[in-house]
Length: 141
Image (tube, rainbow, N blue to C red; front, side, top):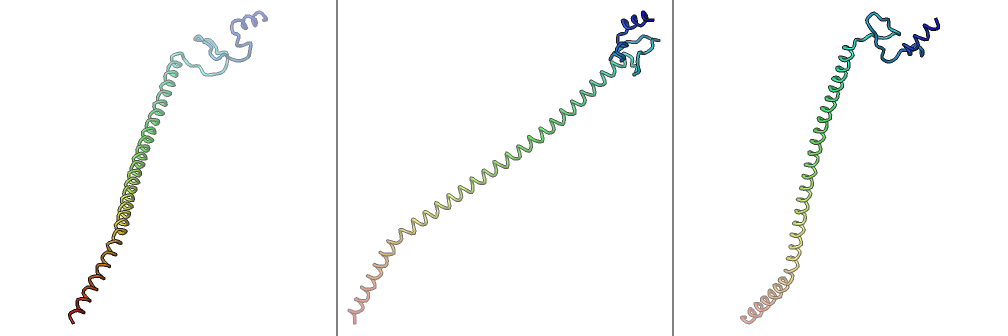
């Protein structure tokens, strides 16, 4: 009995630890050393291929969503850039209009200061003409 136990421990060392190995090859008709699911080698290959295909499909969906998100973000950025450029153009136009209005008002102010001399000369000339007319009328009587 001891010899049989020692031989079985040498042939199947997983029995020594009282647990199954991750992978144990079984021949047809051989009893499984522990509980679990029996899967044929061809089925394992199919499972691996199916898992890789599912993983690739998942990666493709993630990449597609990333591209959609990137495209959407780029579109939003382009809209914001256009909006910012438009606002800058409007601001520059308003600034130019204000500068033109200020320049116009400064020119009007300069013109308003020059007629002071014309007013004085006109007033003195008008008084002189009036006095000359009054003297001329007094001479006629």
